[in-house]
Length: 139
Image 1 (spheres, one colour):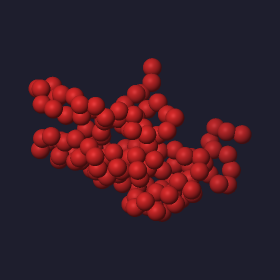
Image 2 (tube, helix red, strand yellow):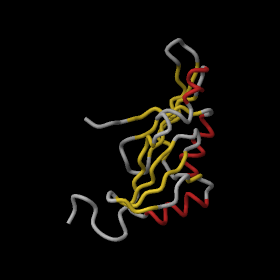
Image 3 (cartoon, one colour):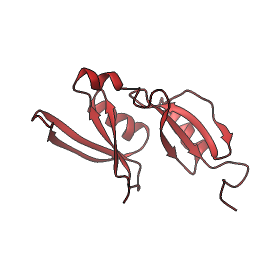
């Protein structure tokens, strides 16, 4: 088994696609018409980092309760962890594309990290290798 998708509530499908594809560099895997459980039209929108299996299902909020959770899906905690081998390069690209970081990059035992917010306001860790040595469990 593997985790295929995680749902992320967004205000608008197209704005979500712009953020994840144009800003973060994810692939748009699918954007198909679909229906809600009660028959209303919606879209099935899946994005994911290039070459990876796990993706995000962008779910456009269509009710007040869904709108209420945007940006708070993880109760203010970091809910997603985006790993890169080129932390400094990816950080610079994201900043140049307008991504809002809420912490400065720092080194932790598990690697280099900085926290940013997605288009809905959810917190993410951008993670990379420590520049000063092996990661826990390595070498």
